[in-house]
Amino acid sequence: MAERLVRMEHVSRHYGALKALDDVDLEIRSGEWLSVMGPSGSGKSTLINLLGALDRPTAGRLWVDGAELTAMGEAERVRFRRQKVGIIFQQFHLFPHLTALENVMVAQHYHSIADEGEAMAALVRVGLEDRARHLPAQLSGGEQQRACVARALINQPPLILADEPTGNLDAENEDKVLRLLRELHAEGHTIVTVTHAAKVGNLADRRVELSHGRLADLTVPSEEIERRYDEVLVQMWALEEKDKVAETARIKVPDVVDNQRTLQGMSESGLIFPPCLTLEFTARGRVRARDLVRRRRLAEVLFSSAMHLSDPEVEVAACRMEHIINPEVTNSICSFLGHPRRCPHGRPIPTGDCCELPIVS
Image (cartoon, rainbow, N blue to C red; front, side):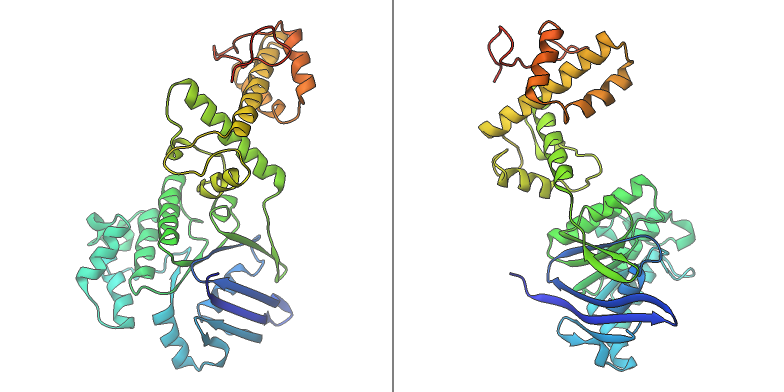
């Protein structure tokens, strides 16, 4: 097991009668991605400020990378921030009179010696080499946030803190920043993000929730995990029908940016073989995929022919039905419809044991 990088013991941060954090215990392992979720005002930013030595707790003790922050004087805390943490702020906090390159070099200067070559390499890493000489006002919101990522990484800190890193971004720039965080995590960086967005939270190895200053584990409900598995199986089946290889990169699960944990869970559940660049059904996974596709396409026929719903309505209703009708009901629907061979979109319907045709494997 990876060594512990962060430890909080009975940490509280009160502002008068307001308890932003209330007796919090937390451990974060080296290389872990932790997502701290919760609504606005729940204490998420307070937690980031404490981990980054930007604030002091009212009570309790806090260690990061073996150093006890709660025992440090102000000069030690400044040195700690320079050497141990990189912070990505929602509001960017770039110096408006400095270029993107100079903003990164300022962070180097505070740590050791500014090096233009290294700073430019950091901007290349985040895709801003062509914008390096531009002022923040000349950059889009997504470009400013990527400049913040470069600044946070320049001194190779052991801990990266991101406070609502995509809160001010459109969908395209959100995906670019999240892709960067995924790459950093894959390289072994320890990341703590605070967010209220499920799309960001789903990336993490572990999610916790803050509510009224208290911390609790946040797990994905089992029915949601199974829904994700089903979506992957249906997509694999559809690719196979088109004689296409089920490449990992082709699989897209709604509301999930990083599919790797879903695919690993499917492998552990015996639905697919261990994922690599391509995906392959196990025997059990193929049967489940066939049944899912059969239910969905039979439901499409039912809603289209018997209820005369429009195409968009058929798709939505069929997706809902595939998760709630059991095999007996499926066979009854199939018999009622006369064992159709194709759905309204012309796709083949796998046959079941109620059909006279042999079962399609």
